[in-house]
Length: 624
Image (cartoon, rainbow, N blue to C red):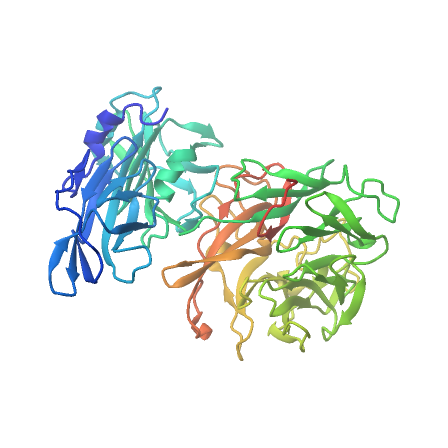
């Protein structure tokens, strides 16, 4: 139960001196009806107000709206004008009285106008500082007082392990956790979340995990923090505070959490190596599911041309509207292709011959670009029929068609095997005008001793996120991509599972292209012990949002990094996600610094499976 002792905690946590009134608002003054015809201007007072509220504490504020008419007269029209709250999350306003909601604080603008269509407006700013706490009944009731009165100590302070510092999270994330190292015995812990709009305390015992502690940050606890700080310029500071037996309090360094202004929408279809049921799984962000569901696995996949009755199915692509999915049967060496009607879970076309190893849909879903053995071909989106070859200027693979329909990004290579393994890759761009493809140009040229591959355009077609690997001691794969001990893709610089794989960004249409490393993504997390994290297979959400003066792109990728105190040393690729916030400027040559935040682990996935290629779609289509 939430806030079991909230009344007791409120005296300790509430901020003093906030303006506004608690409880029921004053009644309207009796002024009689006033015609709003001929209103020249409106004023609203107060023009700015700050209130304190919480889950069990409602605050209200009475506004007064004065109208100036064409004849110069002024009247109180508070009860007659139309009101709007932007955004409406923090409360409601009726007849001039604003009342806080019971779910979150934050900042909104009150807009008053004579009618919903009027251009005459007056605006006031409302800030609601959200104060809340949760104290489980299993912990001592005097914990808040002991934390408040304990002398601070710097000895053996806890360390926040997850989330990483300076992470941006979507406000609809489900299943988040906090991990920390206690660095000493403690009576209990206070997970403290503070910002200009927030003071939230979650009092917890240590749930032991791999030598440290974990706590869930989910449901309404997460909403208290995330919804209150949507789109805020300043971060929420997470501190783990430890109450020692001697009454002293040790506090961790802060981990800075930012929250995106909008929820993540759409869905993911990803490949999971979950033997014997490896296959394609999906997750719907709009529904906020707690777990993914299998879409098609080897247990129910069609037979391939090699006679495998339950063929491995993967290397998939999904149309932007989520209604079609193309996939490869039997792996790159068999390279059969199948097309699904996603809603009916039915195979509508199949090519049981060596047809494609990787594919990408056009924005309309009517066509695909397919890669097979170093060639790019245009395929029909209805039956996978080959329409024509595309001139890539040489061996090419890893196609990805921009959602804005302005081109296809792909990898030009010196050598390749099954369109997956590549040597000395370069990132190229083939422009498209809606009818014809133009000549391909290099965005990031090839360099001996390095590999650039897996390009993923942003939905506006302005940028490409891609992978870069550095060959150990400059040693590149041989022409035949010789395998070590029979392991496919075992060379550390063949684009498949490369330890040094890192994420970069480059523009698509400037005269001089300037790649920028996404250093915050590529950096170690607090519990990582190595620099090689295998950050691979980036894919970009079809949705963007604006934060301050930047465009946010959500990027998913697979990585072998440690998930906090979980998966330590597992060396297992899992799905991670990161916000890349690029400045909104036409002078994209100004992008010289890393625009990325720290990444976060996607909580819905199975930590015991290897997960890759999280293809985005605007909607997860299910049977009616």
